[in-house]
Image (tube, rainbow, N blue to C red; front, side):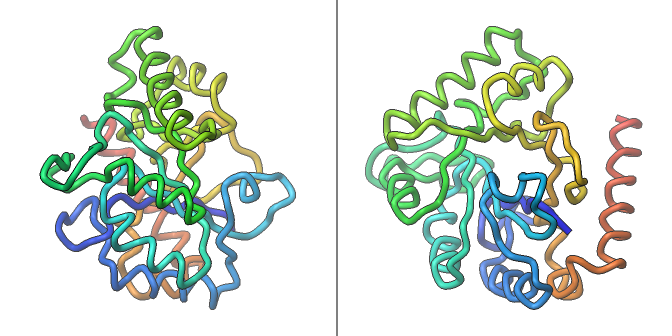
Length: 239
């Protein structure tokens, strides 16, 4: 099995985008017991890689620094953080910004995450639905994020995640020209061959049950994700 796992905030505040801090070690223990190594994206996406997972965090919530980083350090686990750079703070906590009601990182914390080995990637500047923007505006969103990350960290983002997972062929064509791979929210493991502009991920919302954490690579887990993916598709068509 190869899969990319998506997290947002590591806490118990929001029932949709939060993943409880105490469950993260349980999940990593389950991956180890299943023989699924935690890899960086560039290695996971190589054609000769047959097993493994990558950990990704979207948006830039402060809990990635305060709650996820200590766990990642304890397990020696690599991770990628997809930043919406315009949502970040750049000063003391009294000016800390929020997104979806949760506190965001400031740039000092992003730099500390980068120094600790977390790969910082692009997630646009203002987190819009890119399908609603003209091509020039999509490019501007990506360029603003890339410039900010390059200026602060001295490295250009190699990977991209679509805000809200919202994408179409036009947006994918733009992202595909800019990044090595662009990540969606399509709920499934990786297949042997994937379109690099439309890479699927497994959302942490579906990784909170103990049997999933202990058996991510099992037949029942695969069936569960397939069923949840089908429900998503039905809701999307009705919407």
